[in-house]
Structure formats: C-alpha cells, structure tokens
Amino acid sequence: MSNPDLDLTITRIIKAPRAAVWDAWTDPRSFEQWWIPEPALCRVTEWNLTPGGGFQTLISENGGDFTPHLNGCFLAIDAMDRIVFTNALTGGWRPAAQPFITAIISFRDHADGTEYTSEVMHKSDADRKMHEELGFFDGWGTVIGQLAKRVERQVQ
Image (cartoon, rainbow, N blue to C red; front, side):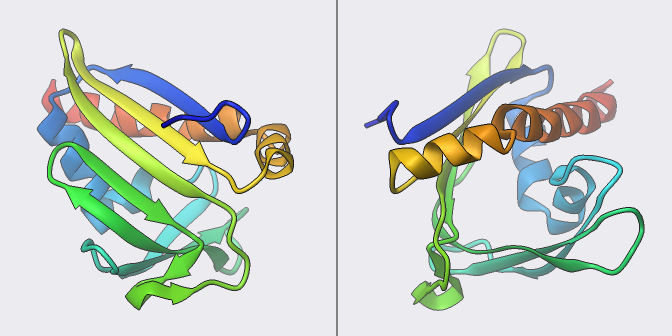
C-alpha cells in the first residue's frame, strides 16, 4: 500500500505501553502538549474523534496570537491500533480548500514499549518532495520525540 514516490514514513519506538501512547494521542488536552514542535504552542479548537469527525488545531509561534494550523477530518479510528486523518476533508466529510496529506498513525506492541509509525501520503511526487524539503523528518520526528517524552515520564 505504501508508495515511496508519494509517501513519507517515520517510525519510532516509544518506551511506554501502547495504551499510554494511544491515550496521549486521543485526548485533545494531551495532544496540545506535544503536537507542535516546542517552543510553539498548540490549541485544539475542534476534536470529534470519530470517522467523519473534524479536528482543528491552532499554532502560536513565539507566544503571539494563535493562527490556523491544521483543519482536518478523521477517516478511521481503530482503537489502540491506528488513526487515519486527512486535511483533504474537514468535519462532516466536507471537501477542504487546499488538500495536502492523508496520514495513517499506527500503534503496535514492541518488546520495548510501542512501535509508533506515521505514514503521510501525498497526491503527487512534487507534494511529497515539498513536504520533505519543508522538514518532514525533523518536524514529525520532533513531535514524536515530544510525545515519547511525555508518555515515558508518565509511566516511570
């Protein structure tokens, strides 16, 4: 299913049980704490964790005003296993103005905790390349690291 010409994938082992990682992802107040690379701040303004449910995040860089960050739609929620979302749609399956990605977030048991994978799909090779050049691995890697730090502290 993965297409290296269109997709970017990052996998990390998080030293915490899958339930802890899942909870950190599915609780909007927790999500706000790690979703955007620090020191920027995140605010969740919509969170309907059901297929077709919308979610919106805002970003504050340098402590300034919050501005739009991500407006998307959850496509699939498979408890403790995966979350699929896109910004090609907004809540209620409404078409978005500027679609860019569909992401599959997977959670798997691992001997050291949880194998966490983000597979981000793009409509074209040009979009994939642009996302990579914009810092996909650094940005998504940073937020996965922030997620790991948060849940690993909680389970110690």
